[in-house]
Length: 276
Image (cartoon, rainbow, N blue to C red):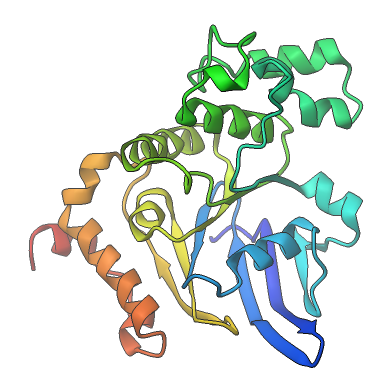
């Protein structure tokens, strides 16, 4: 039996008005994620991916549609804050706060006592590769370490759903791949429910259970592509024939959003690996 959706963003529409000009951005988007599922949203640059995220996170208001968590509509900023932990594209670490104090910031804002907040964050430092850097300042960390600290700050809040908006987009290619593999491992280990916005097809296939492909603006859903490969995946999966075929399917859906192949039956992994 399929688990009910933890997150369901239904029929989301958004337009922006600039003087006499109206820009249609989102045209009835549906996205859902079940408990413990990793879902990626990918689409052309400027199609409205981040706008969709901001609506789900409660940072912007949709013109139509609704967001539900565990079947209940999420209304108001407080309700969104209780449901989602949001990590934007930049790490946004405060340079004057030590790493530990950066990771506890969200808990402190919620009123968690400082000692308790520190204890909760410190317990995660080893798994996030940050043990020994609790008292370091952000400028002393590598780009990958800063992103891990930002993600720790996000997950320590223990929200039901993580929203990750291109978290590795600013990293160099090698560090980005290392971080993708690391995230694949920890997200499976902790059983997080994750919605990721990305422009990287390979990243989406490496991390996801399902990929939602958007059309150019005004964005609608071009395809929903299941990724039936076992998780967590490592970087050597890039050479797997089934992985390569899934990449090709996502690329086809991006380049030909009306094509029949975009909605094709999920591939048979065993057959693909056998080269059939």
